[in-house]
Length: 252
Ligand SMILES: NC(=O)c1ccc[n+]([C@@H]2O[C@H](COP(=O)([O-])OP(=O)(O)OC[C@H]3O[C@@H](n4cnc5c(N)ncnc54)[C@H](OP(=O)(O)O)[C@@H]3O)[C@@H](O)[C@H]2O)c1
Image 1 (cartoon, rainbow, N blue to C red):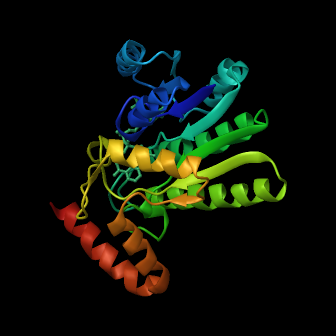
Image 2: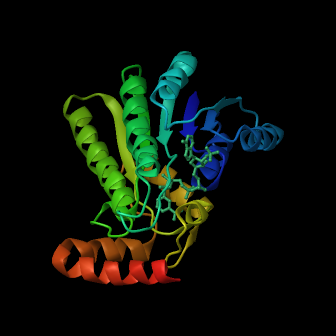
C-alpha cells in the first residue's frame, strides 16, 4: 500500500510521511530538495519496515506533474496527500507576477492535475488536500495565497460530494490549518499573531480526520472557534480587522 505525499522535504509534509510510515504505509515523497528527501528516507527506513520512494519534482511545472504521475501510476496509490504549497505576504501590487503565477501553479494547478490523474486509477482510496484557514475568508495582503486555498477548499468539498453521490469509494478531505511551526513563515516572509501548533500535531489531526472521513479538518480549537465566528460575521466586518493585523506585519 503506497501513500504519495507532496512537499515532504519539510514541515507538515515531512510529518505526514513519518506518521504514515509509522502506520505501515510505503511512501512516495515528493519535493524539489532531494537532499532533504534522502535524509528523510534514511531516517524512515532505519526506523520502519516500509519502502520509501523519492521523487525530485518541481510541482510548479505542469510537465513535472505529469512526469510524477507517469513514474508513480504503477504503485497503485491508496493515499494521495497534496500538501506542497507556499504563500507570500505583501500588497498585491507589490508582489511580482511571476512569483504569484508560480504560487497558483504549485498551490492550485499541481493539486488539480495530480488529483485528476491519480483519482482515475483509484477504486478505493483517500485524498487529503492541504488548504489553510486563509482560504475560508478573503485574506487582504495575502490575497493570492488566500484565494489559492479557497480554491482548494471548494474543489475538495465539491469533489468529495460528487464521489459520495457516485458511490465511488474514494474520500476527499481538506485540511485547513492555522499557524503551524514550519518553514512556511520564512518563505512567506510573515508571522502570525495566533498561537502556533507543531507540524507533528497538525499532521496527526489531519490523518485522523482523513481516516474518519471528515470532509473539512481544522486542527486546533482556537482556529475552529475563529472559523465558526467567521461564519456568522459579515465579511465587511472581518476585512478591516484582517487588514489591520496583516498590514502591521508589513510595516515591521
Ligand atoms: N505553516 C503554516 O502556518 C500553514 C498554515 C496553513 C496552511 N499551510 C499549508 O501547509 C502546506 C505545507 O506547508 P508547511 O507549513 O509545511 O511549509 P514548509 O515547511 O515551507 O513546506 C512546504 C513544502 O512544500 C514543498 N514545495 C513548495 N514548492 C514546491 C514546488 N514547486 N515543487 C515541489 N514541492 C514544493 C517544499 O519542498 P521544496 O522546497 O523542497 O520543494 C516543502 O516540502 C502548504 O500547502 C501550506 O500552504 C501552512
